[in-house]
Image (cartoon, rainbow, N blue to C red; front, side):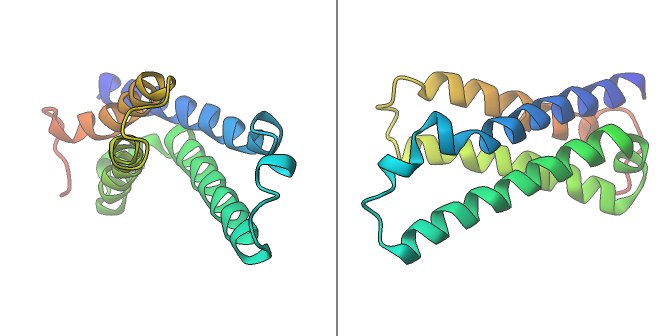
Length: 132
């Protein structure tokens, strides 16, 4: 069980880094200028989505670091592991579908999302008795 716990905790720390990264989007990507072309509703949706994703990353971090054993031993924990992994997989798919791998940073984003995607779901395939 130690390897499964370590896997989840590493993914949790990475989720924490994603949270910090999302908090800094406004300044990193100069959103006051780059999003100025959006109408008021589109601008609000864009920010609301980023705030929502950031809260999810905070939740992923908290649950991964503070409730690690429950993620492994309870049904809802197993469901959360699959969900957390799925969010990262969806981001990887988005890189192919939305950016068509044209962005220079695409390989970096794919690798950074692949690590927690695998680390969150890997414990479910181990010898540990899972609930699902």
